[in-house]
Each structure stands twice: as C-alpha cells, then as structure tokens.
Image (cartoon, rainbow, N blue to C red):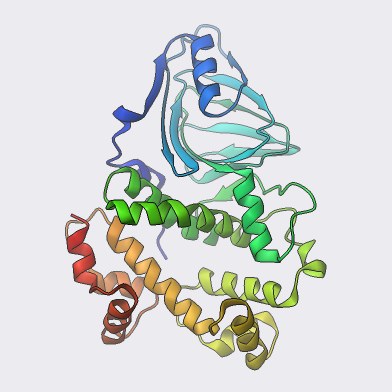
Length: 334
C-alpha cells in the first residue's frame, strides 16, 4: 500500500495563525520553543552562521502538531522530555538524534520517535526542518493498559527510528493526515470533536502495535491471554488491510484454531475478527475520502485500496455504518 509523503501532511494548513516565533536571537528561540515543548539548551554549532529560527504550532485536542526550523546548524539538548513523547518527521535537511544509547538519523526516509524517559539531545543541519507530533505520556500509558490489560511496569521506551517504508508508517501516516485535515478545517464541528476523542488513542495504539518498544516482549508472559491474542491478530490484519484476509489465515498466523480466535474476539470485542476488520476497512475508506486533497477522489479505487473487492457490498456496508453513501461523504467535505 502506498503511504502518504511527509510533505503532503502539511499541505494547505494555515500556518500563519500558528506562528509561535520567528527570530534571529538564540535566547528568544530557546525560551519560546521551550514554552511549547520543554526547556532546553540551544547552541549554534558553527559560529559564523546566523540563526533564522521559526516555529509554528497548532493544538489538536491534547496533541499538538508543530513545524520547527533553525536556519543554522545547531545542537539542542532538552535532556529528558519527561511527560510526553515526540514523533519527528523530516521535511528537509537531516538531524542526528541521541535517544538514550541509540543514535537515530532523521532524514526524509527515517522519522525519529523520542520517548519520555531516556536522555535526549540532537544536532541538526542548517536546512533541517521538522514536523513534530507531541503525544502525552499518559495517553501512551492508557493505550498500553487497554491493549495489555495491565499498567506498564516501567516507562514505555520506543525504538528511536521509524523507516518510512514500514507497516508502522503506512498505518500512522493516514492518522497524521487526518490530524492535518482537521487543522485545515476540512471537517465539520461534530467530526472534529469525534477526531479529538479518537485520534490520540488510535495514534498511540498504532505505535504500540506496530513499532518496537521495551514492553512488548515482557507483556507476553503476563498479559491476559485473550487480549494478547487479540493484539497479535489485529496487528497482523492491519498490516495487510489492503489484501484478501480469511479468518483461517488470521488464526494460522497466531498459531491457534479458528474457534479459539473467534471466541477470544467475542469476549474482548463483542464481535468476530472479520467483523472487526470490516469496520476498520470502512473507517479507513471514510477517513481517506474525508481527507483526500483530490477534487473528485475515486471511491472505487479508495475502497479497493483498503481491501474491498465487491463494490456493491461495500456501498451497502458503508451506508449501513455511516447512514450516508460514499458520494455523500465526499460532497459534505466541501
């Protein structure tokens, strides 16, 4: 499945209303950026260069989406983020992140994910511009509790690098695109309130399901069996949402009988695995149609992109789920 490019995420957002600062002064940049993220040390790495720093930031519920550039090669040292995580996508240039003992090169092909607890600092090229998503630590912890059935025993520490050709990015990018669509004003007030409630949970859950972290292996022995099986099955299905999937194939991937898988989903989700997948596919199509930048997005192509092969069945299921046709969804976004 093709993923969304980082540059497309910011297209059309009114960044003028989001301007936090634009300055040549190092102290001013450090202070104002610290109000949005956290206090930090900021130094120009090459003395002859002049800072041309700018930052735009827009809140989205308890998350925030920011665009940050320094215009000079810099060294930045926040030490520890503490109560939040930052997902950083490179728009231009490059940076080297040190997250705990891990060194992460943030480029147009690799994003950086900075966890709350480890020691953190980074060096950036003069042309480095990043798009950052800030996530509250409490939201990550809540999503983990929902997935595993028990609280994290230690702070959740994600792998610091995410390649943009992985299932994790393919699943995460549409969610970020939906955040951007909300910031562009493409959703009505009711849809926006719904997005505020749901998107943070979906972003956190996607990271926990598809991106490596220090709790994943430890949960195997302790997590409730039904929740653990559900997590494995849902991860497998989300990675292949554009492909034909059978309940037998899901069960085989999890190493259990079909009856065991179905019973587990009924206990945890109140529905079978294929019903759950059907709803994910409908939600994915609706989100894609609502956030598409195309004047007339192809409904058939979008449906097939998310695994619908029988368009008549898709249309009936869509109307039943959302009380409107796909064409009405496209019309109402304008």
